[in-house]
Length: 386
Ligand SMILES: Cc1ncc(COP(=O)(O)O)c(C=O)c1O
Image (cartoon, rainbow, N blue to C red; front, side, top):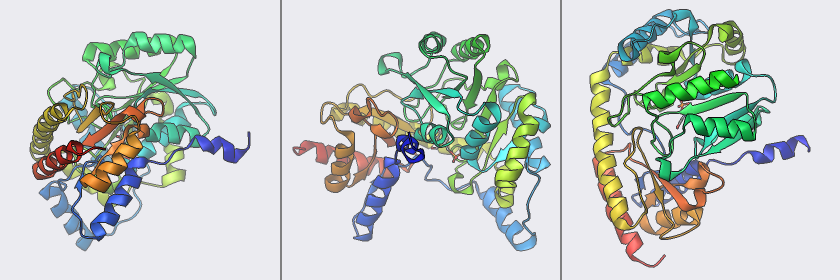
């Protein structure tokens, strides 16, 4: 296999292509309802923006410590104590350029070249693309709507028996399904990983956005997991490119050296923003309430419109809907929904290369008005023959 063929496993992110098409329509003056990209419509908290504006005027912005400013890392130690009753050593935290950089560091620092890492299908598309571009081998574990899109310890065990892997990467709440793992189930998954000698990576980027279930961090069950988190979603800071990792002791130095060389440091202004954001939970909880309300309305409407068995998400801000009543080609369905219905959504093939042709993901992180107008347009679109 040539080098370029190896990269054939890389796939475009259709959500971004739909976004580009939507922008073209908007340039022609057409109003589009954006339900395709997974980012909050709200701004960062006012205190965050004020602090950053002051710093821009008054302070130089240089490189920071490769692991991030100590004050931000101390804020994160406090966050774990408050939210999870977990004691984290400030030295084990590494601030990253979004969780995206965290994945790269986790894979490279935590595994030998070419290692096999298990991920769920459906799942966040960048997992497969990052693993493939770094020369790792993804192993997919299929989830089902019947099991509420949740992973269990038995499924991990069975998948391992079919094809052994070195790591398991799991997000709870998950993208694109919004599924969360119950506390005891997460504990069992981590326990099975330990028994099998599988390193567990916990993507906790949607923490703060549970719709009612208890949010559990892998850190509550020990310090051997790699925990990855971000300011993008709950803290409404996607473009600030700020995230963090909590590392097992054996990986701290190695990851720090990699981070020094690959990224030097995370953006200094964003680090300041993150530090302030950690203390603005009432503002962010209010945004979460909006998503939960949007999710309730959207889920009910999708079911009424004929999408099959759309679950009320456990968390995050996505509805993953079965479109088989209308189409078995989610890419075509999304193109037509945009072309004729002026609603942008993401085809399931982004998240699931096997069954995703039957699913579409709708993000409800925008405003109530956006969701209501999208529902009206979709109802009109579906009432006409496809
Ligand atoms: C599950 C999951 N992890 C990670 C990311 C990447 O986030 P960021 O790099 O902005 O922290 C996303 C973005 O949508 C996501 O859905």
